[in-house]
Image 1 (cartoon, rainbow, N blue to C red):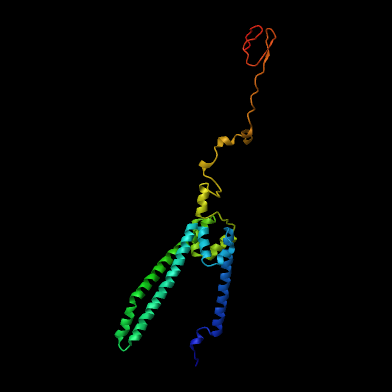
Image 2: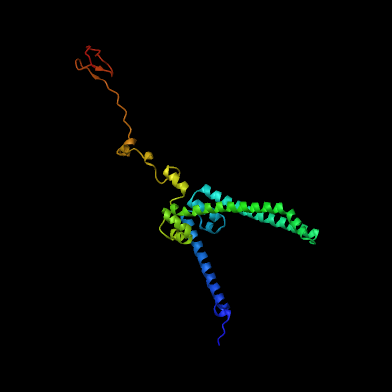
Length: 261
């Protein structure tokens, strides 16, 4: 007769340790690879690479690189507000919940109604804490949406199509690695591309209506620097009839009266 135990069908302790060891090594390697990819991506966009490893700053720069500076500020502000409200809400809930239990214990737990009356005393405070926490969750969802849009727009900021942005959303590490180590160059976020389109600061091209008139391009630029020489004043001469000299502007000879002009 063979006897089977539960561990015959599962992993023993050494196998579990080996599994978690391999898993830990893989996760560490993946984290290091992600840091390298984002570091290089930030440098391609003209942002110091170390910004990619600083919490909040990396989120702000990522949205700013792909989307707009104002949107990045909004995302960062919403994230900080959500975290602050979440902490405040949890603190309020714990304080009033503890106060309710404390009041119930102070009255004595001889009857069940004493416990309920003590908890009801802090009920309003607990409700306020819950509402604060819910508001924090709503704001955090909005901030996450802003962050996702910024990531999706990274593809366009590097000259990629909309399909590449979808890939950034679903497979962020892989597509970030493609941008970081590929030949794609940073062409600017929405703000920079609008400035370029309208010939603003840092414009790389101009609209057709801002280009010079082609007919003026046919004139050599050196001709615009030429100055028209001043006309020389007319000089006098000698009368053809009597040979007497006359001054400039004289119409008749003073000697013989012959018409000169």
